[in-house]
Amino acid sequence: GKRRNRKSRKRGQKNGNAASPHDKAMGGTAKQVRDARTARTISIMAELASPSIENRIQACSAIANLFPGPGEYEQEVLDTLLENDVFRKLNSRVTDSNASVRRVACGALNNISSCCGLQVRKIMNESDVTSTIFSVLRAENLGDKDEEMLLHVFQLLCNIFENNDRVQDIEQDENLNNVLRQLEIQANPSNPPDIEKAKVLRSNAAGQLLHIATDENISLARKFEGNTDVLGKLAAFIGNQDQDILTRLHLCGTLYNVSLSIKSKLDVVRGILNVFGSKEVFHEECDHVSKLASGNSGVEAVVERGLQVQALALEILTNVCCVEIPDDVDVTEDQYQCFAREHGQVVNLLVSSGAMRRVMVVAETIVSELSGAYSEKSCPETIIDLGQRAVGCLDNIVQNMSNECFDAVDKKALWDLMFGFTRIVHNRGREDEAEMLESLSALLWSLIRRAKEQNVELSLLCIEKTHIQACMRLATSPTTPVVRSNTLGLLGELCSLGLGSFFSPVIGTIANCLNDNSVSVVVQALFIMFSVFGDKTHNDVYESLKLQSVLRTLLPRLKSKAQDRNNIKFLQMDPQDIDDAIENLSAFLQYKEQESRA
Image (cartoon, rainbow, N blue to C red; front, side, top):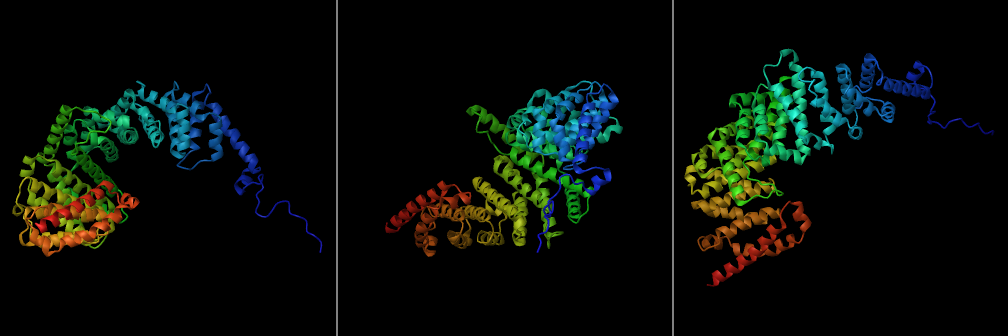
């Protein structure tokens, strides 16, 4: 019945002075080991100010070795370094009189920035690391001689600027020019072959830096948009198949970031067109991506990056087709007309230079892949993404090309290709390809709309009975609301062009869409009804389908849905569109009732 003596520690409670097996092997308690590590770190820091060049080099190397990889460092060591102002002290070594010390000090900073998180990078900026590094980049004595130093400089800047509000530092002309100068040096074939690897590495880092900078710095992006000489060089670099693929990929990201508002686009278009190869080469690239999806790497990984470059290039071409003046930029009518004229030249260049044909080749290859190698399985995301962007690019070209260019386009070939593409994707019914189907349905609608605008007969497009039937099925199939709305728009344009015996079945399909679960689809169907039956031309069809009764039943249901503003916002629909539809429907019903009484 005696009470047992309490243990000195509760079970599971750790003794702060107990040593781990490793620490015991090293001798001493954990506290003693930590104290020794702290003292050693402080002594290394002291050597940074040593009069001995060798000691300074060793100190910088020792600090670099404390950070071997992302997340691979001791928090206590980092805390000790920060408490002892490590960045200010390394900064002084980055501008050391000795080139080897400068190189190793920059490498130490690079290692820390690569291993530690955003908070540590912010502390770097507060210690003026960025300013010091840019001063190194400006130094005349670097030139092309210290490849390793330049590589550390660019990688360090990339690490610091990613997700950092100090990215505007690169906006200064001298800083930006030095980054661009390094890219020009790398592109120069006269560079000695023994530094080729370092050239590729540093140019890749420079390209990544520009990508990060333009993505996060609106002011810098504007500077690029207006600098046609720089953009022309970047486009030529991206289009050069002999350049490093990662550099081209990052620079393509830079060009994409500014492509909506480029002031002079012709040089950019000429350079970017060189990204696209022949159909045979592209087919081989897709096969490589298939192998990559199976677990292979090496060449396939390089090819996948090449396809990513092509995908971004397609986005750039899509953006340069858009006439978009930034909201915060005031332009006169004359300036806008001048911009629009040049924009027309750009779009016409895409057609006359064969760019449109090259983009069609991309689409043709995707169709071949989906109906061949991937007919029974899911397609790699890279190829789906490329197909979607190719279709989006063609859609913008079709919408924005001049009438003369549209007349010269082989509209039948484009219709056959895109309709076949649509049918394949629809039949596959895969969720990961739904967005591509949305782009395809939008392009088909654009093509029919342009044909209508220029009074092109349907017979010239060779639109057949099977095409119309397929569109009718697509409009009522369980696809996305965007696909159904786009297909309805297409059917509406076909109705206005004349469908003969197919008119009534198509109108019947559109009428069925008035019961769609999506408000956006219902609104689209309504506007087609207003357009088709706005006069007495097709009153016989209107009466035979009893559309007056259908529309009268729809009105209160639509009003009820309009009250749920949150749902409309969720559907990404403009509330004004549904308000307009309700107002127009009420007026349309009154008009038709008066017409019948008359």
